[in-house]
Amino acid sequence: MRRGELGMPMKAMLLETTEPVEAQPLVLSEVETPSPGPGQIRVAVRVCGVCHTDLHTVEGELAPRPLPIVPGHQVIGVVDALGKGAARLPAGRRVGVAWLHRTCRTCAFCQRGDENLCPAGEFTGYDAHGGYAEYLVIDEDYAYELPGGFPDEQAAPLMCAGIIGYRAFRLADVGSGGRLGLYGFGGSAHVTIQLARYLGCRVFVFSRSATHRALAMELGAEWSGLAQDEPPERLDGSIIFAPAGNLVPLAMEHLDRGGTCALAGIHMSQIPPLEYERHLYYEKVLRSVTASTRADGVELLRLAADAGIRTRVTMFPLAQANRALGLLKDGKIDGAAVLHVRD
Image (cartoon, rainbow, N blue to C red; front, side, top):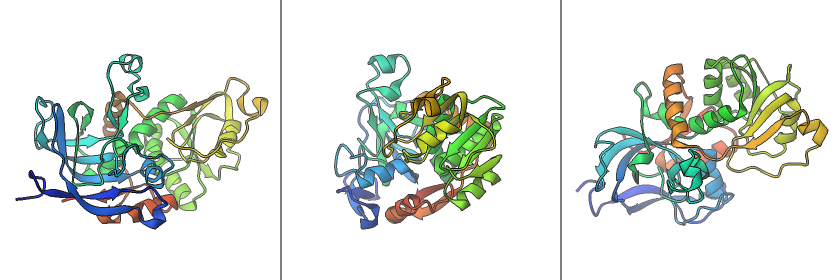
């Protein structure tokens, strides 16, 4: 019998207790291989991106709803088995799986197209086992068909870093010729800058890492500096990717009149008090970004193909997930980290 067949276990990095990543909380384990239920597909995972949300989950800042849990929600793999009634994606088709795992489809938010706000929404690697494993199952309607031209490791960061960056970019509302600020320059920002430049935006990057600032300039930033630095011009919109609440007053002060600051993270440290006239007056907007919709994912994948977006990735074997998360925590990953799960 081979792995994946009925009764055979699979390898997975399992989180049983949330604790700092330095304590190596993810354990390489053999667990039961899942079987797809009605309307579901099983995905043989090839690679899985490593996301800040995974770090927040592992360390307990976002306490996962079931434990133990297999994290990971930037998944690229191949349809391996079909549940009863599943017919949209044939066996052998390459697919992506993202953060949004399932919604109720019937609430007011789902009905009006805001399924990212569904109160019953479930999320990959948080409510359901994710991609730090050889297999996962998901409702077929929540898996993405992938465009050609993206190798697996290039495609993985698009499934969250790309999608959430795209949604944040839309909500920041910066048009062609506009001035966009990016605070933090990790996996999501390094995709977003390519998208923004393709769409004609001028980009200004704030990062504490000299290496990340250099990468930003290489990818088309007009200026880069520290968050405390004054940019050469006021900004029409900005996105804060770093989970640091102290950046919010700085970003709001850097905005021009009528500008919008979008908070792209799922977790953020305490935001300091804001002064009305200094930070908010003149119709400035501060808004959060909550997950994403499937429509966001479809649009991002199309734009990524059109723009020829290329992700910078550092590869790790599955067993080194703790190390990858630790380097991510320390800001030592240029671009995105990706786990190699199988050939």
